[in-house]
Image 1 (spheres, one colour):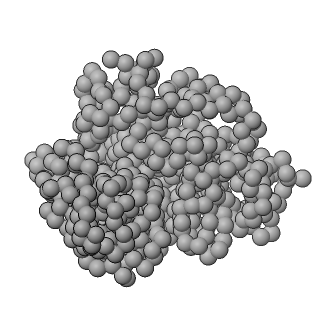
Image 2 (cartoon, chains in turn cyan, brown):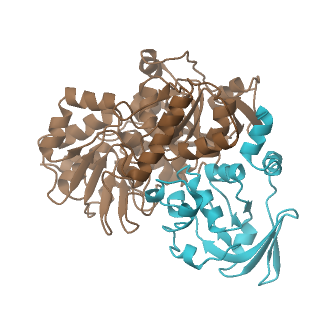
Image 3 (spheres, helix red, strand yellow):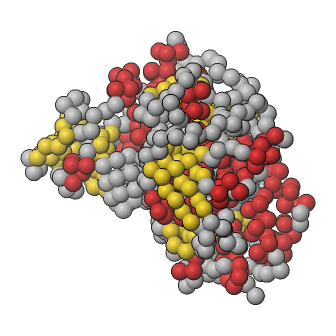
Length: 165
Length: 420
């Protein structure tokens, strides 16, 4: 799988309240949540400016705080193709594999990509390319069980198979 | 093999003699939990999977506590989803308004989670039950949907970090100050993916409410779970409440820890986390010039009866500053009743504070005390992210209940000793 889009950069410890503020959690409709994606972050106008397929590039501990799955849902429904960060908070990481938002860990890539750069993520090859600067970076390998989840189509598809539904 | 308490509990729940950090396991769950924010997605996923039954109708807790009592029509619809699903599947652990409380205060209080359990909840503060000696961790809604079907969840066995506390706690210093000090030391990802085991002479003497507060905020350091070895204090707390059999697990003497940190707490000031991260921790003595507009006492972190007593003891005979709104929210109905019985409600109302029915409410900027642009609150809650209690240009300082009460009177951040 390949993702291509422009980079939007965010700092360290972006919390899920910044990704989708709790004041909008009286719904779980993906399109409604997407309207507020990154609203309380350092780039409140993100949703107005970003284009479908664009990529979020963030420093360490992306998605910390609340367990709300509304956060990866909002990012995915906004049309962000994938998120690259130096590290992800645990529950956010787990949620992404469960519900199907592609995420990649690569400190090199985060340091080597600037806001607005054109980026290509080649998930199968484990490579992130900065098409603007013509540099390549390696992705931390996805653990085998997580690959199994992705191949199954997420946790619910995996569970359906296991439970014989 | 020598194992930590976390490893032992996980091993026992996946039918193995031993487990090692990094190992992937499928664990049987004693309880699955979700609230009015997270359960709607779980229910949708559960139905979409074509599931026709839940794994055990006595082991799924659905608690409308965040935007309940329903704050608006959309929230009412979400709460109704929980209600209807609970009736359809005959869930015995659905708690209606009037009987409900903040989930992480209610479940230990009612003996629904017990020592030795493995619990997942679609709420990040599910790690609270480590205070009882259980393995509990926050997950997302999809994990809960799958668990409602199978009664199981996958885990990577976490590495453990040990935190050892020695010394003597000062007056007005409690569990909240211990965990804030720790988060201030290691940072908001200082325990990422790891188990945080709290121990030492201070913890061994710490009452249950303080232990629950400490484990509640393990997630604020990125921890997978927080945990404290159960002992006589635990036994006394659970013996009269437990609805199921419980088991005490203890770490082996030579269990393996990736990091051991020691803290001498003698002379430690009450600790405050400044905006906009729980790791921005300073002693209260450095923050006397910070004016406040609101003081909130409550939440899953500090809404227990002892927290109410502490705030009441400070504010008794004083008046809330004319420029401050003080909002006190007991975490459960039992705590609410106890506050009435002990005269605490009179103390709060005579001081000019609002006293509310249980709800998570303002902690996550839901309702019951939202901040306007430029306003500042001191709160006994657990997060101070941008916009957490309302407007993105508002601020939250996190403290223990005594400091929140004293600050409400002073109109600025301050300590009980300053009240005349």
